[in-house]
Length: 154
Image 1: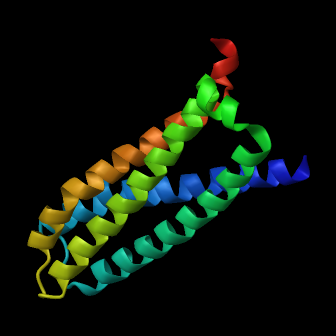
Image 2 (image 1 turned 90 degrees about the vertical axis):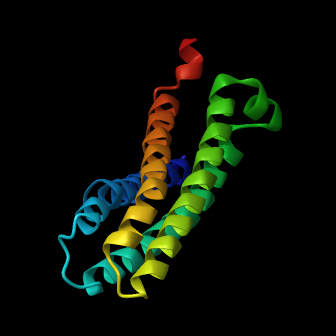
């Protein structure tokens, strides 16, 4: 029981950290960079590097804690045959999408920054990060549904 509590808490903390970081970059940092608010690429390189680190660590922690939660809370039958189980599978798909979108967006952004440009790389990476932010928000919504045990209610 203590392991499940620790896994749930860790899972939610890292999900919130990851989702918040991605949403902040998509809603604040990249629009500012696109609009010319930065004079140098250095802060953007640091932000992109930190976001990539947060994303990779969070992705790994979520994989491990989520795998433990799914392994202790679901059988193969209940994973595919219940609403909550299908929500867990949706969460895995969104996790994969978010991981890929952050990696793609960061690489696209960093590649442009190496050319000492700011506005163009931000403009090119912004749609990818907006999609990542939507995936992050969807992950939190699904987490809320699972926390409410919505499958029991229907």
